[in-house]
Length: 380
Image (cartoon, rainbow, N blue to C red; front, side, top):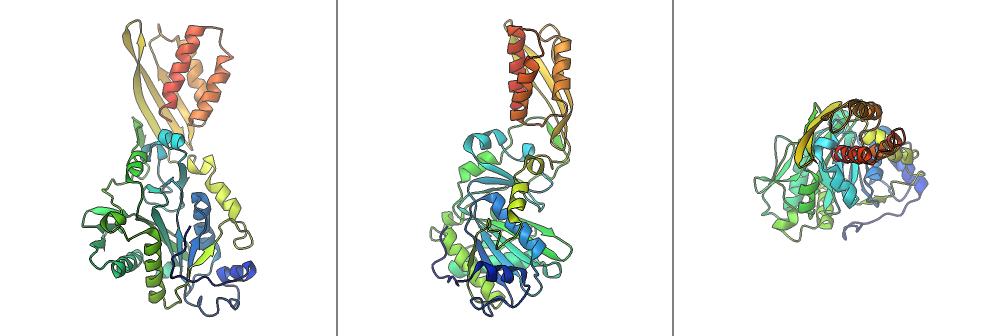
């Protein structure tokens, strides 16, 4: 990741940086008085789990009283859902698997967003008492207009940023703890809009859930209006405005989110954020009620599937098919076999293989069985 050309790096040891972050004692020489009223950080990592872990670590460990923090981070292609969302409703999981796009669930609420290297993520950390999303967004607007005064950008009552009165360039979410809080938002500079649209469109039919749903919006990149508004230029402009607003020196401090000497325990946080139990298992209870047709003796037969999922695992499974196509005892074996398994294609493949070994050698039956399981995997 490139550092904005006008920003300065101040040399420091890992020990002194840890002391700085925890505010346990007076910062060592290197930072001098620059951190008395705030700090600007930028991650050198493009891993979504590592960067989300930094947010958790700062929120849980730093003393933010009179020392607010602005954190810049950018990720390789990733889809990030809110804490209370359902990924099967929010995105195209099959396409993401094919393209190697990561899925992450953050600690904050809000809607689903797509990240790539053309998107800037900003996290504003303050005490709970000083938490103010609109103030943060106005700071971003002011920074953008300082670079391009003719830019038509404004903050909305929904705490989004709109370009030209209709295009969303920034989504927002937050987490408010007992004493600390953070507000984070995206900022589209040169994101792949086609990929964004494809990934944030769920192809799954019949999903019913009480999970928080995202609100669709037209989006646009800043660089589509002004090619000079690169990520580096925008980061530098926001850092400058933040430094002016908080009366601190305009220094961006690069941090490595995997450094345990800097952030003790952070790797275990990042590891938890990429577990199946957190990403999928935290999905609010939902159901899938769908059907599909199969060709049999020159006619189409309807197969109905109803599945209840809780904590990411199948709680109820009911596959309905004509008896002459699939015997009742075979359907019962399938239905009972799925119960308790993860609602994911890998587990379904393993389960299919196991169930095959419990049935008589019947090639036609196994072919139907495999087709059913492939159809079911298509909704996972």
